[in-house]
Length: 272
Image (tube, rainbow, N blue to C red; front, side):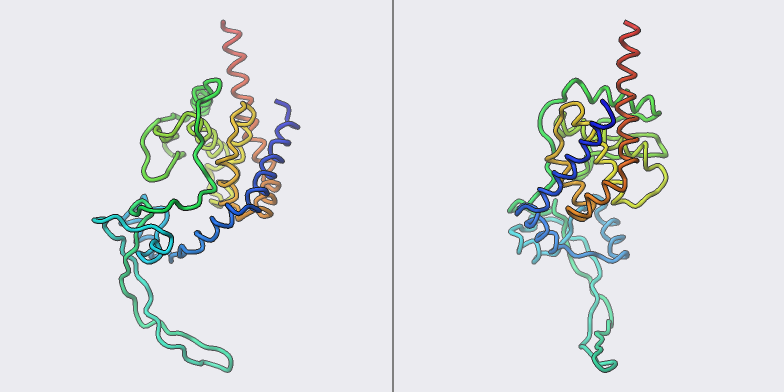
């Protein structure tokens, strides 16, 4: 696949993100996201200690406002909320609300609730695996020194890349098309992100690589990739700017995967 064609695929990714982030679907997503609190570092540690698989956490009343209710018998996750005193004026035009303590507050993860579906901008892919691409990508991982395991992962996790153990895990319950996309994504992490980088940048780059790889083989991952990249990059203009800034890294990783697949096919043909 010529590099110029891969450039066009990144243009298509950017255009898809622009269309999504100008849609009512995206606005509904933002409206819901705005109801989730940004928890302090200490509360994040508390949440992780009690439910390491938690992804979206909110209080009972917040879930109710979104048409969802906590399932009977679910165990609360306890965090600490500040107790704030009355406003006091500390200077002309300046006020302060002193914190005089903390109180425990119960919150629940989305997996502990039921009711109305939350608006999604990132839907898992459905369908089959074109051209046995998963096994081809598994072979590429092996050549890179990574093992690939199909396992059941907690929560909504689709995959993960462990650099220390040189291991990639893929959610086995997903449909074949999603498993292909996830493996391409994790291979991109293996190529680009062994050294720590900003999480949002790493996810944007890995998903952009996955989009290029999948589109090259006729697997349209837009239903997942557009929302995933926009969610990590912060929306239309921001996502497009960051894709442009990371273009070389994305293309380099995509080329490494695609060229590796092509070389493996040529080697098999020569051996036949």
